[in-house]
Image (cartoon, rainbow, N blue to C red; front, side, top):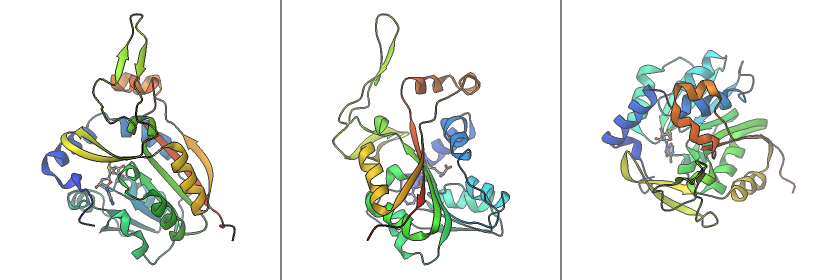
Length: 250
Ligand SMILES: C[S@@+](CC[C@H](N)C(=O)[O-])C[C@H]1O[C@@H](n2cnc3c(N)ncnc32)[C@H](O)[C@@H]1O
């Protein structure tokens, strides 16, 4: 676990991220509404939230009727906020990396993850672990940065405007998978770039049946609250998958 990045425990990054989440932001105006629309019936369910952050989704799940929510995250700072701001009898927060999911010996009806899987080093293993952790017919619901967004190694000046005012987004390095080092509050934040086909095939190979794929698009109400969302009319920031555990053909 030590070789893994834990940038959310960097004090400068953490404070900047919390400031971001406390204002109008892409998560709350774009990604979360699209995720919420796909959350299945929660009454009596057991949920694993991978990269649970400050636990707002965990709290939402118990409020919707989930009987057990395990929220795991690699960041102690994020978990401290979760335990302080979003505690509930049905929720357990645990410091753990998603690379260590095979150490869990319980089963869940829903494995959920919001904007954490682009930090996973081994996506194939992650999908197999998620599959193993679900009951038959259980649901995997996750969002991550869109591969169009993670593709380019050089992220300077990615939006360009032509003489007629049309805006374009520069895509580069798309087929070349692996680490991307970006500046996000601090230098050298590592995201993993994977092509769409790699993501889809890893899910299928693990035994998932994909039920839904969503590329959230901002509506005019959201754009009125946060003008920067307009750029998601040029290209998507996020991609969401909802999949069901099926049986692998022997
Ligand atoms: C963008 S935040 C999202 C937090 C939360 N899911 C939400 O939507 O508010 C990503 C989270 O993933 C966590 N994370 C990053 N790498 C991780 C890893 N290898 N294992 C577990 N959590 C990880 C971070 O610490 C952070 O809390």
